[in-house]
Image 1 (tube, rainbow, N blue to C red):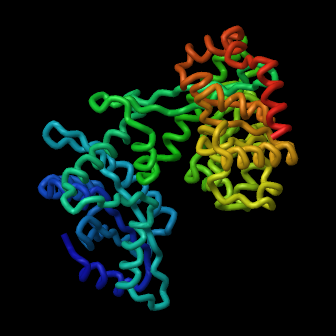
Image 2 (image 1 turned 180 degrees about the vertical axis):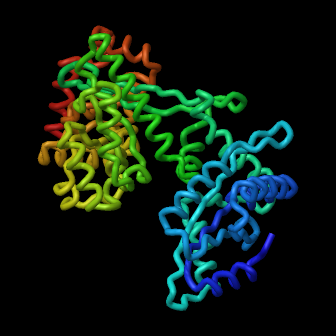
Image 3 (image 1 turned 60 degrees about the horizontal axis):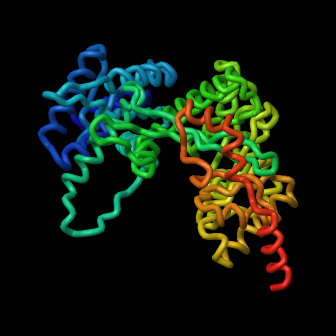
Length: 432
């Protein structure tokens, strides 16, 4: 293939035009553990590309795993972007290498060279550099004897499997009950995604969620989660459980989309689910990261009837002014402060402060991660009436959750507190 020099010459000769670059983002990771495989995949992708483009298109190999396409001065940016998007979709199709199936990660970028003498070499370099602008996780090397090739191979295999997890039906939802002790009932459930890998078994969310976000799959998997949760909530209503609400976690990558509120509205309409049955959960740091955008999204969602909850409260960097500006419906006390709250004075002070803050702002406060009866009793005595945690129930399959929500007698036993013991504890507290 031509290299940079013929490309730069053509760009300078034309004087203006549209440049496109295509990057095979898997190349370096593959070469970390199997250089020959990386080369074979790159050759396959380049062969696909050259067969798809017309002969008059100049294609140049401009970097180890990147090629550039010069569209020239006669192609408008919109048409060039459409062609690049089609190429990205086609080049990302599965590649068969022996008994291995690989879904390549392809990125495309474009830039216009105006007719004012812009440096063509600098323009090419900047466009190539923009391929790497993608959020991702960095693996910290804890030991100098770590097998980096094995680590890279394992990470790449996990990425490939995660790309196909939805199509293969490996993702499932679990529902952890949300308890309203004041009314003595199950008020809803938090939907939690689970990945059941055919050979690895259940993959921990702490392992695959960072990979999902680094690969840019947060929106795709997030929308799958939202649809699955809405479908489940609709089935609860069909079974007579009309008062339940499903809570769905939304990542920062989803929050960045301008059409997020519209996507939520379309999802509710698709499943014939009222907005009051949905609660969107965001972590504290995500909710506070972009005040203007978050305010607009929250206002749109709440205007439609969707509720907003802040997860892991107390671990981020909320300010009182932000809490007042953003319209939250619920604050969830992080499990860090709930664990052993019956014995830890610092956790007690924090939980009491959050409960008082919620009461003053008119916001419900839920304690998550309640695993022991003593934790539940202490929190209840100090004004918290909403709970979630293994003391009440682990995350359940859909049918199991329905059975739990209907078992009012079983829940009543979990909620019951000896009134005499309660009186004695309050007396001890007042006289201490």
